[in-house]
Image 1 (cartoon, rainbow, N blue to C red):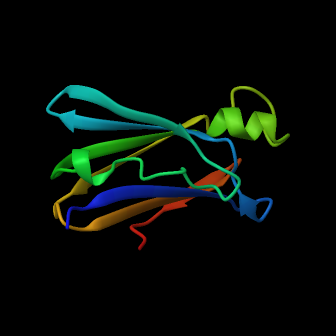
Image 2: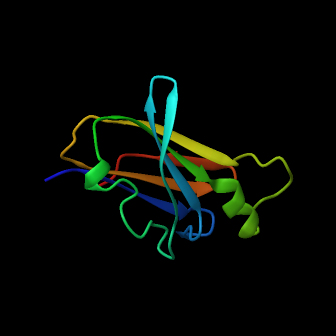
Length: 118
């Protein structure tokens, strides 16, 4: 079985999934940054399929870039410009090519957190 990567975004200020938020996945190799996928979250705050499926899954360093500012503005939570949180990058490593990695984002206009989920 090969591993895969999923993500999930929750709007902690409103207590609901963050629907329609754009997420971009990059693979990092040294100073190089390779774009692998661009997706939007669905009504459950998840992408419709793994953001990195088994076919492209490999050990390495990755970055998920969440377009939080776009989402916050559209949901009426933007506030004055420039926003405190606009683009939220999460850089992480995948060390087990057979595992499921889940990287969720808990988001509000003035804070965020993440963890390795299941």
